Image 1: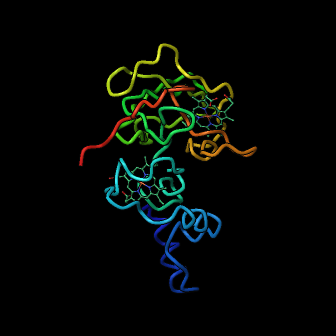
Image 2: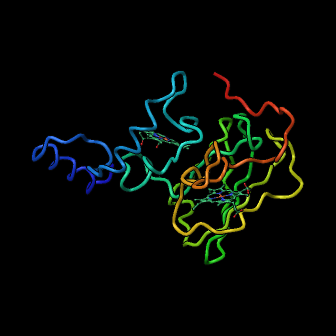
Length: 183
Ligand code: HEC
Ligand code: HEC
């Protein structure tokens, strides 16, 4: 936890006796609470909370270890099957390129020391052909993202006028099972 965050907690704790989550930002605290508890049977770490907006907790204000970009890639538009071994390619406004690869849970995360994009950032996903089925052409996001590092801030099922569908590899994967993490 960053020091500034900690001391604000410390102060809040004594002054108003507030909760210690998310640096006393009530909107963020509510959003985090709405995500619910840790899913059972999944250790807290790289495989947890697939599909959730990771940076809500994992940024400078979130209180957990800091990521610059993170998210989850699914096999297709509708199913919950997730795709490991997918390359998530990011290109920032300085034309710096970084590719992260999803793990068995379909999750990927980027540490600021690895890549801290200067926005806007363009994104595409493509199979690396290992765990996930091979995708010939990358899936491109046409519009860049201007500051948001969590894919799930805009991408989650079901699709609504406010959000895009979860990020996926194939429009129709015909029941491809997706990748699983061994216990
Ligand atoms: C509701 C809050 C919350 C969300 C959302 C969340 N995490 Fe976490 N995560 C935590 C906490 C708390 C820990 C344990 C403390 C820590 O490592 O910072 C943790 C730990 C981790 C770790 C281990 C970090 C380390 O330094 O050892 C990884 C990796 C991780 N999460 C990835 C993710 C990914 C990827 C997502 C999104 C798909 C995500 N998390 C979503 C709260 C969250
Ligand atoms: C600020 C909102 C926002 C963020 C953040 C965002 N996206 Fe998107 N994304 C969209 C919207 C809206 C579309 C649909 C229109 C388009 O392609 O530009 C889209 C489309 C896509 C597509 C094309 C497939 C499709 O459903 O049309 C891919 C692939 C994609 N996004 C991947 C990602 C990944 C990976 C991340 C995280 C690194 C991410 N996006 C973060 C808003 C966002």
